[in-house]
Image 1 (cartoon, rainbow, N blue to C red):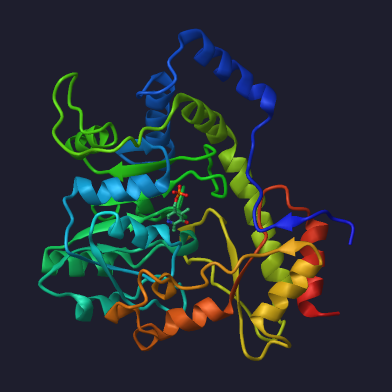
Image 2 (cartoon, rainbow, N blue to C red; image 1 turned 90 degrees about the vertical axis):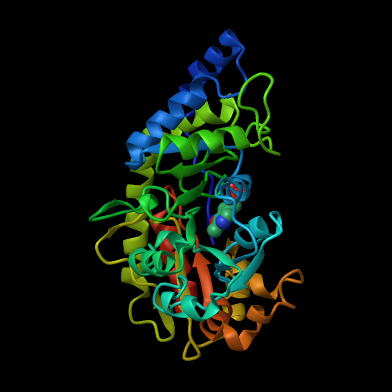
Length: 369
Ligand SMILES: *Cc1c(COP(=O)(O)O)cnc(C)c1O
């Protein structure tokens, strides 16, 4: 095949020349971190772009998750999904909180709201769902349960940058939403993350927690962490923001092409593009059914043999990792839909400059002709 190694994603970088003036600015003002000018500018710019009220930037999404839980003083048990990146549950363990896994819905692979109520105990304090692949959770149903049982909701929105529906940004739901700007995400600052919050008071507490708990030069009010985004990453974020719409449009073209070319291949099921949602086309997951000509792992290997590197996001399930698998809620019988999805899913390469000819070559390999 004529292409080089094709990975599931390729970090999106702006033209280097466009970044030089930002670097010159940093070298001139010598502010490298501690919520400097680029940090402040990026917070403002992201609020505008995403259509949210308040944002606090972080060094990465995982520290942002850990801090979000602390900001709301979440303890004891939190209901979450096993079908995610391991950082979702790890953020709970880092706070000494017990994750309680509930199963997902087969159409969206998001947490099934109908399973939440049965998992609530007297120890439950919050729900942590994930907008998997950027596909919005059933936010209304989740909020209703949270209101009934007086629970907080923290969304792991690491996949949901820029996702909107008719009501606006999907990041405005729940008590807090957490973003990741890791190199592999739709919008990246090399490493980075953010917490979207609804009011100034919450943002102030989060800003303190990400700076060791300092409220002023001499007062420390909490055992905060160092979670601040540095000026280099913040400056890059400002520049990335200028290119992100174009990147998402390019992803959309690839998404449509995959859907068109994969249609009708027996045993290959594309996840529905969310109805009435403005997606970010961050991932292109397919489910490989029993009626496909070979198994999912055989297809994964076949593509790898041709220098195509898809990813089995999410396999294994979080609940199958050693630090979780002994928990009662981690039993496979409790999670049949997630267990099946993890065995069938394959995320195909998608990124702005993925060539049409490569997409065609990938589909040809899948089709087997
Ligand atoms: C990427 C990701 C994270 C972690 O974000 P980092 O910025 O890499 O720490 C958390 N949850 C989900 C669902 C992710 O995909």
